[in-house]
Image (cartoon, rainbow, N blue to C red):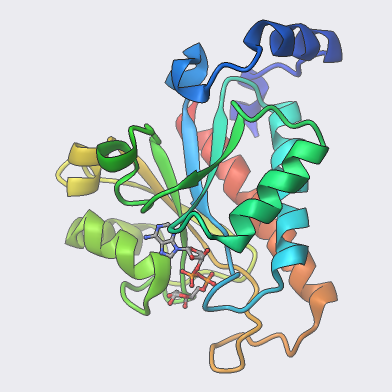
Length: 231
Ligand code: AR6
């Protein structure tokens, strides 16, 4: 990935001295609030019924790997409610691993209103998509397509017709989209995660060996894609 090469790997010493300087400052006051930020929902853990404990391990490990390699970016896992189980699991596991909460945060809010309602600027947002890359179907997919307007559907079709489990499609959002104008979102990255819901296509019949691999692939594809478009 040529874009990844623009970044440098931080040494442990740099990381530690940075942590010391930060103290307990909140992320809002941090100069890194200006860094490109990816907001993403927890892929597959609602309609696709993926196990929350397994998913939270994969999210934390994938985020940690990515942030070790790529500097000057932030990640925000978003969910609608402050009672979200996946947010608390991830927060707890990320804390135990000592991951810098200014670089990887959990955030309660609607992913389509992060800046206007929550003051969190995210230039790139991820979507837990369906294999047809179509609007509707409920969940975060319906919300993002609705908020972005028809231009997202058109721009998505120009990029791809369908998507495979574990992969992503990055779509530049036309500047006419309300999501671009109101929230400052420049790209939507569609992800298709593993499906553990017998009522949905590509059902994995509870095979978590396959499921975990697909979820890892999905996050690594999402994060690489974010680095390519954001920097
Ligand atoms: N903002 C932030 N997070 C949200 C929002 C929102 N507006 N809406 C839902 N979430 P899901 P999946 C959270 O079901 O499990 C669709 O029908 C939600 O609480 O959207 O990957 C697609 O078309 C959960 O934590 O995605 C697919 O067919 C997370 O987003 C299928 O569902 C993902 O929940 C994908 O299922």
